[in-house]
Amino acid sequence: MKALAIKLDKEVEVRPRLVDDAFTILLDPSKTNRDFNWKTTTPLAVGVRKAVDYYRTFGISNTFTHLKQVVAKEKKVA
Image 1 (cartoon, rainbow, N blue to C red):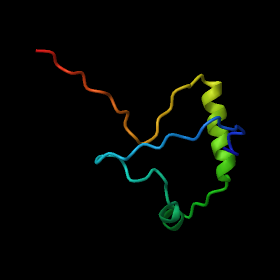
Image 2 (image 1 turned 60 degrees about the vertical axis):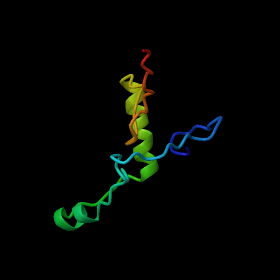
Image 3 (image 1 turned 90 degrees about the horizontal axis):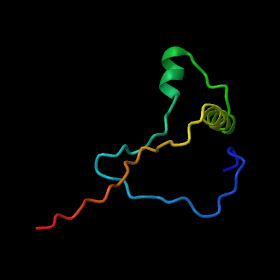
Image 4 (image 1 turned 180 degrees about the horizontal axis):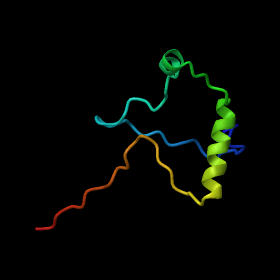
């Protein structure tokens, strides 16, 4: 939470991954570095902070992870 400059009141909820969820959303830039001679220049904490500032500037209040929202199924009444 250092990059966001916040302290959480409670732990982040971690949900089990579903069968069709992505294993990870982390990217490895090594292939891009090799194939295009591109190098990262922005530290992770700075990039996260800039992304959050962008969301705030443009009023984006809902963002989602790679996990799908679990929706409870309604029970059918006969």
